[in-house]
Amino acid sequence: MNELSSPIRGLSTQEVDDLLNGRGAGFARMAELNDYPGPRHVLDLKGQLNLSAEQTQQVQAAFEKMNVEAKRLGREIVDREQRLSIAFADKTIAPAKLQTQTEALAMLYGKLRQTHLQAHLEITPLLSPKQIATYKGVAGK
Image (tube, rainbow, N blue to C red):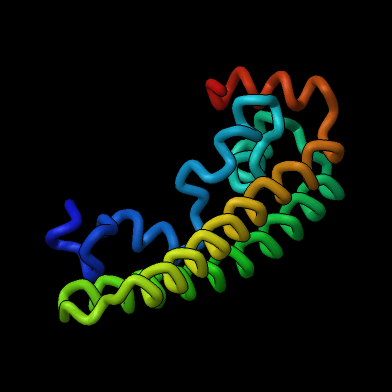
């Protein structure tokens, strides 16, 4: 779907859905590409990675913490994007309002990226080098 069929012009339906559901949508690609696995993917591959019960519990806790915060930030981003879109649609946008709104969105997107990257950083020490190598091979990262 494109931006025209989205509830928010300027964001695709998929982008809105990703934001509201706490999905990474590439925010942590840097971590993935540098051998810092993501908690959701590690949990999906726990059998192939031979995670212990303790590792599974710790990764699950990190994922849940990240997911709650990512969803909170995502809702706020969607709300602010909607307000910005409406201001453009209604032709009520002014330079000062544009600056304030885009700066607030930039801060929120930065916090969202940090939230996802932090989860990768948090779980990596929980995994053995062998598990990380297996993850890399299985996940194709």
